[in-house]
Image (cartoon, rainbow, N blue to C red; front, side, top):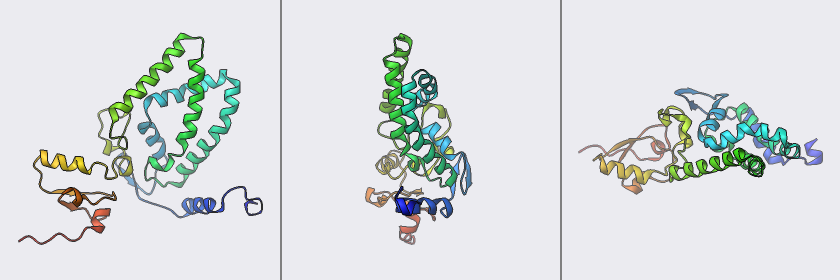
Length: 227
């Protein structure tokens, strides 16, 4: 039917079917390694989305229940969110939150309507609540600067980030300069490095022993023999 009426782009459908049918990658979640986890993206969403956003998301059904017109309009916004997230969970292609970033614009549009409804409410409690969430969100952004890629919300608690998620959820080479500063401060001359970024660590004068199986382990030349 799609070939006859061109309802969806052919290339997108072909790519989607390929991912669902064939694409598999080893994934890491909560200290375990597998070919994919059904709860990978729910956990990533819960821990890498700011808590004020999640709280507003939790109360949005109550607001939509009182705002009939807003609820009807939101149905069209929730359709791509639920559809894309469902396909991502089903695919078991767990390489990072970046794979579902496309749901956030739709989510923000929906929450924007909920925020406007609360802000225009005659209840001073609701107006104060939405303003408090906005200030909390702003503070979270300021405190996370400049490490936005490695951001985890306050629900993580004292646990280390790498105990929950790794790969592009933490680092894609944006901290090579920071790593070099740390090596200088700690007087570390050489470091064992597992790195998947595009920049060459040697450009930052980082002398590393590159782990096999990582991008640097594949691209880096063999270490010179000791003399």
